[in-house]
Image 1: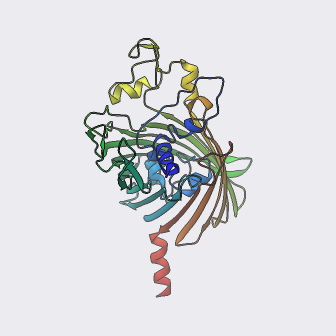
Image 2: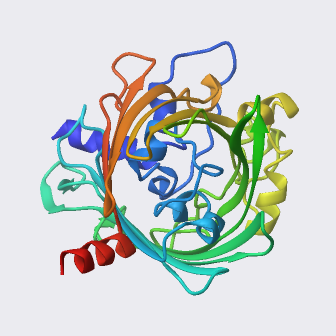
Image 3: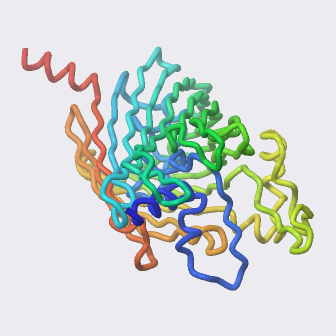
Length: 392
């Protein structure tokens, strides 16, 4: 029972603070940024999950909504659907899960509509009173529903927007300190861009891509009327990718993503006057102010701001557009969470569907993210329709 409670706490602090709990002490001061609903920044699909969580500038696929909605404008198919599933923190408890459903429909040659749903279940959690007596058992759950629109502006450039409804029910209305709790609700949006161009490297054809995504730009969230509202994980993702066609059957892609949370960095308060800030800036600001302030509010100055950037690097190899091998690496500064892990995975594509899986290997031992698996399957409706017609 204690393991489950610890796991839930870790999950709520995770990703913006999960690894803060497990990070090793470093010479710098630990000062990780924390947000609510951290499940929004978990890589939901196996392809990006196998490439070190890099996906803002890779070639478009059905899961582009999470990484960069504008990529849909360049997608080859007219319609598609993808489903992904990941058992989460299985080193601690057996039934924390994240499921992802995404799809797209092409409107015309320049416009694409897309939608997705991500759902996180934390499993049954016991709630007790101040004397330790069991009051109830509740299954905390969170989800986000997205709708997006992508448009091709030029032969090489596209843009996209997405709107998101976020719901987080962690307590089921249980009273805490005599105060009733409630589900947290937020509304957010993504603004993204994508650029791709054919290139030639050493007489080999290829493609260069650049991606930019401002994601989860939205309202703060609170779990009670007495609680101060907290920021959701507003994020800036910037990246590039390069694909080289080695021959008619083999191609390889290298991708790099940089990420920075657009929320205030915790300041350093006076030990004698708790409300007095001695370094950094006041984190209790509005969303627009927080976004701009996030680039220069770290107590450690520019050096600490630089440490808040995470790096995702991935490599993908395809043979005959049917079989893929992938690997990657994710890095986060020790003072900001210390997430460091290698990833690997594979994919298999037929005309009608693509099956992918990924595996995560943390650098540190006894990390709660160890042995994380992701499974994804995607369907191309055009291929399914053509296959059924050929049989008929």
